[in-house]
Length: 212
Image 1: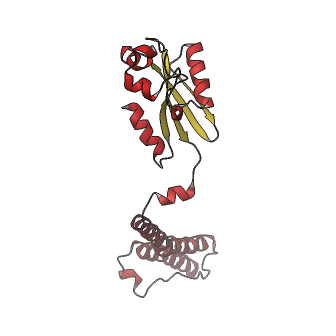
Image 2: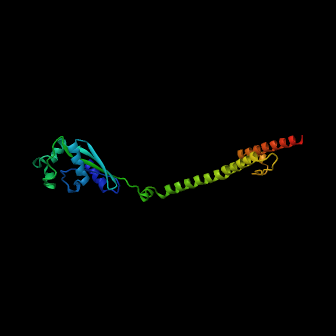
């Protein structure tokens, strides 16, 4: 089943691939790559279960496959193999497996490079239209916040700073957002009205003190 799935994967347009291979391969299409040969040598010599490296923009990974009794029915001695197998693969390649020893590897290749075009092609037109609409909505919201909140608050701040730094009794240009601002339920308008009222109260007290 694994071999059949690997054949399907190798024939598919998927970027990531996996396959089963061995240095005792029967089918020439399953011949090991240079990486597979290195992986099997390292797994045998070091007694490890897996091996990986980055090569040619890909993450290459191999995990060992150990021969069991079921493998020996076809891959043991050629004379003991089923006639259908020996007729298709007369050998001697693909035989000589030993129970409990390395038979081959499952070899996986995963591309590491990022393709902008490939990323775009993953989504259809409706998805991109929805994302574009969301993006425009966010931009519109940011513009609204800037114009309706940030700019007015900066104007109130500038007036408050100018009033605090002015000489007593000096005229300071006031900020007026709308007519009848004092009756508005807008919090920024309320803040501006309160700041202006405070400035007027301080100015009134100063003038009254100067008349004494």
